[in-house]
Image (cartoon, rainbow, N blue to C red; front, side, top):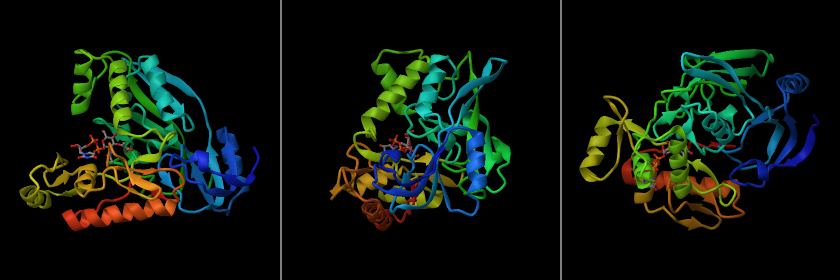
Length: 337
Ligand code: EPU
């Protein structure tokens, strides 16, 4: 475990931004992590996981701690479910594939989401009708200031749409080191309610899908809409889907009857930001090295050597135009550093 200086981060963030860390260390065990935290108290720290949800706009003037904790284990099996614990540095999709291969159900709808296991609870990742909060039992996190390990139950994480306690009250205070999921080993709860999945399965003539079928369908849908970060720098959805008051939605609906929406509660409605951005004319547009993906307007892409600032400028232009057109403020989902 060696602390390196001026370490390049281009290959460690999915936007492929060429930024450097003032200092960098990779940790491969909880003990190493504790030691680094203890020996570097008072230093500015930056915790790096899969690098798939951040946009670097400058060099990082801090000690970057790269969480490379690995391992997956079944901690218990009972009543038709398995409790499976994965360390934070495991690649998320690798973990999903492990689950499919062992016939553990519950995370198949979250196939191919970039990033590592340890960051999944922070923003309660979700796709195709499932969120991490549906299967996560608990996560273990290290308190940065005291190096004490604390277990957070699902309820204690205070999950909401792309939100958790780790993004609000406890922001910057804990490092997640492992996440444990409660997964089915029989009678899987297949969730194909999300329109595209049903169509994808029907096209293959599958009427009673297995979790593997669902995983493959989700993978195919994602591959058709979302660019592979290895080919085109991006970080998935750049914006969150805005949640607006029902009255505002109803007024907009009068003017824009085709606007898709999802009912969140009796008083709130979620509107797809991808639709708002597409209707505002940005889909497939390109401004220098920065652009909006041609097949999913929610994704901002780096066509090559964009700086983080260029991408941020584009995101601001989008936010402003959407606000002018619809009176809706769309918020970044990605962390702008
Ligand atoms: N839409 C458009 N134009 C676009 C994109 C979307 O009109 O360019 C419309 C679609 O027609 C559809 C609606 O928006 O009516 C929803 O689109 P989609 O099913 O593609 O999902 P999304 O709401 O745009 C969310 C997640 C994705 C996740 C998908 C599938 C957020 C911020 N994003 O996108 O998550 O994969 O649902 O469940 O909630 C990610 O977070 O990185 C991510 C990719």
